[in-house]
Length: 223
Ligand SMILES: Nc1nc2c(ncn2[C@@H]2O[C@H](COP(=O)(O)OP(=O)(O)OP(=O)(O)O)[C@@H](O)[C@H]2O)c(=O)[nH]1
Ligand SMILES: [Mg+2]
Image 1 (tube, rainbow, N blue to C red):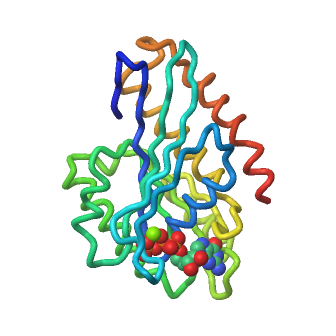
Image 2 (spheres, rainbow, N blue to C red; image 1 turned 60 degrees about the horizontal axis):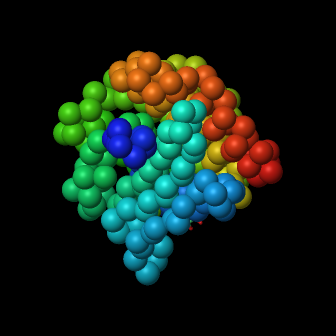
């Protein structure tokens, strides 16, 4: 998190992590499409010819908090291809929260596991504790055949600490819910660490309700 006292601006870094082709870029594209233009900035993507992220994508979302504070969420994606590990580590630097985008296809189970371990390693490399780091998990591509069942994902959700979301990012389903879940978890973590309410008069309940309200309609529209 960056605080600019002069500009009265707080910048929060959120990273979309996961194996190659799980739909990280598609999540940002869907958010960009669903969120009103006064909230979402320009989506910057850097892709190779076959749609693979080479470096990262970036989408800024800006919200007005109470007391004239601007809160900017910078959403990044990492490149999922195994060879781009150095870039993934770099993008994860200073992350305040992470959404792990898993591929629901049974055939991708191993790739998900490897990417998850890789994320934990890279968090540690960046001196971020994977145990306390705000993390949500999204199982994407629910529309495809050969995916893990809803029951299996529900069981996983019950077993783990992290909130789990199901999505079809290509249709915009579940992407706003995932983002709101990540924002909620991340903001509460930042509040505990930096006392934003005390310093800026930014009440977490009021601010998060405001974010939900502004994006809530987008989630419903996507169903
Ligand atoms: N059927 C289906 N396809 C999806 C869904 N989400 C993404 N895709 C497709 O999966 C492919 C990969 O999506 P990307 O968003 O580029 O994946 P990525 O995770 O950014 O991939 P890297 O940048 O290589 O790490 C594209 O062809 C998307 O259209 C989904 O929910 N359902
Ligand atoms: Mg990508």
